[in-house]
Amino acid sequence: MKNDVSLTSATNAIGALGAFAVSAGNFLLADASALSVAGAVSVANGQTISIGADQFAFGKGSLNAGGKGLVELGPLTKTTVVALGGAGGAGTLEVGDLSAITAGTIRLGESSAGGNVLSASVTQSTTVNTTAAVDLEGSGAIAQSSTVGATASLAAASVTASGSSVTLNNLGNAFGT
Image (cartoon, rainbow, N blue to C red; front, side):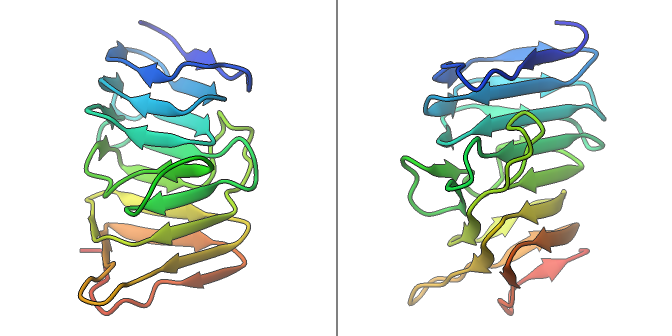
């Protein structure tokens, strides 16, 4: 596909997002159903993939905006939680460990496709390593959690965060490496 692809009606019900490429433009999708990325979705390097949904998970798919592009994953409603690792389900954007995303910047908790609604919170319960810059956005707390015997460290090119409180104090964190 060429040019921008914009499917931003909050009543869209896609379900499974299969493989496709936008060769010269951005891809914006709002989805009211439980959305699973089932194929490789890409835009040209430097463009944007923006997804707004209240329930999201990676199937066997990936999102690729190239090393200079932006990938945004945010909610449609303000009660949705963004989870790095941990359990998914209704009201959760489960983004895993970010290994299925290629971008210069990964924004979690807000998307232009979702009407720039901020997530209720952003939580991290697994180790995340990415070469991208990470931008965490929420109206509530942004925090790392750790269970006995497990750590929730974050390694990224850089990290910015905005929420009612921000706690990213795991000793294993590595920003700017």
